Image (cartoon, rainbow, N blue to C red; front, side, top):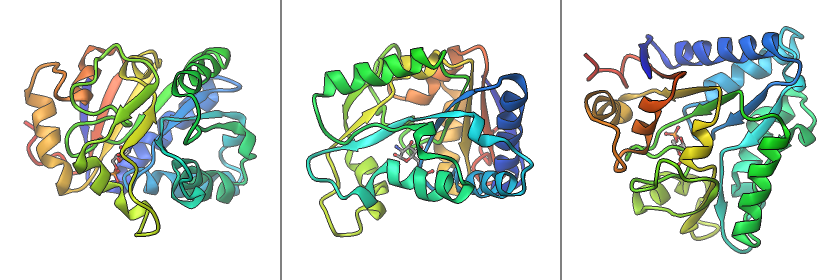
Length: 241
Ligand code: GLP
């Protein structure tokens, strides 16, 4: 795992954009896993612009959702599927059937097995893009999740629920559970790129660099991956040495 510090959130986006370009050059149908949250938005804006200008054949790729809220009767507008559709796929003109999203309810074991087998059927994950939670979570894998875990249901911490509360904006209680690719599933990717920007992530990025691989810090699992990179802007990387 390597750390790369750049100046701004736009520079973080540029690094991720180049990796997406790389995989689109290397393969006819590369497979990407996409995060939600504030961190990837500059990347998504850049991808939309390049796709609209005809500079990037992004519609050739397959996309997998990393995670999703879990609960009955969740408003569609609060889901991560909606986030990815409205923040990337629709504005970029990418047919929605290029995205394999996760449902918000059903038989959890079946849902998890379906996501895993769809990933296998697509030939595996080429590039997993990640953000990081303030507690070190990746996707919805909270501290304590085994590093060999596969896709499944997780209990969300209060901190994670609060961080995601903006998507529910008072219309609905914030779900207590999430369905997520496992840490072990993410580890099967050929390449993993974790993006972090802003001073709110400086503490966890510092811990990630200094500490060992530990269950309490899910992102530390990437230290055992052969091609994982942590790209941070100046503010998130302030504690790096
Ligand atoms: C959520 C998502 C994660 C994301 C994290 C950080 O909990 N499940 O996939 O990485 O938020 O979000 P942000 O980029 O807004 O800090």
